[in-house]
Length: 375
Image (cartoon, one colour):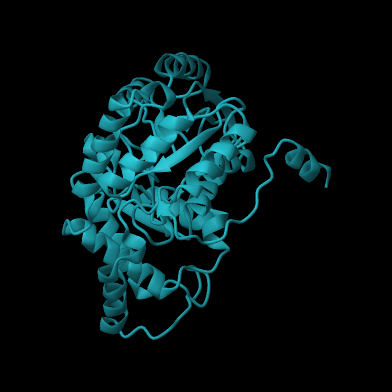
């Protein structure tokens, strides 16, 4: 219980928020898919066409839970994301936990960005491989570490390089082309978490990896369905051999009940919207460009982490200050949340602003006027 007291003393104690009627600048629902009627109606049609009456999966996918919609979804993911195989998990957390706790073996090395997501860190801790962090988006630091590990490891040892295409707490991106070149030079396996790029980057929202044409240079990709796709669940994309391995050894896949048929149908329906360009992707991209232009016009750029994604962060040093500023913004009618240490490093607390296809220019103008007054 002392840990709770310590967190309360640091004004960093978490609690569950209640729903509000504020203008949404905090959710990961970048395209508004979570409330899209076309998607909910499409999911129902999938169930009706296949005559699937059940509400639940009924068991693990290895037992009774691998209903027919799973095969349809994984085939759809392979075509859409241009990959050999796809394996659906219950969440992005489960997918990262399963991959990193089982794929890297004893004697292998995992090199990960210092700002990598908690689910990846937890998976690495559960596994048997050695792991070392490199500086955030640090090409030079990564190059040094890849050289060092490549020269001292045996030919049997594998090196995994792990990054996110869009970082959830910063909204920035690594130089993925340079990462891929380094990994090719030193025979490393590049793993990219695309959670916050799906539905935001690419011609149809395929993600940043495909926008850059790097899908054949990646050992494994994580795509999630609870953010830009507006549903729930995730998938690991890679080779058929990787998929078979995960089915046999990823405990977070093996020992849990599968997603319900309606959940899988919702994901399929959302991907149909992406494929048919009915998901307001262009509107989202316009809003991101407009927001960055307003930052420049209001001379706020020095307060924000540079970002071309849907995530924009105004740095505010100190938990108390971040909380206070967030309350002021919320009283003005905008749902903007503070991100506090220890979620982010101490001194880099922030207001995290998420843009959506449904935010209007006036809403962005009014929000930034409030932020400008505060900073």
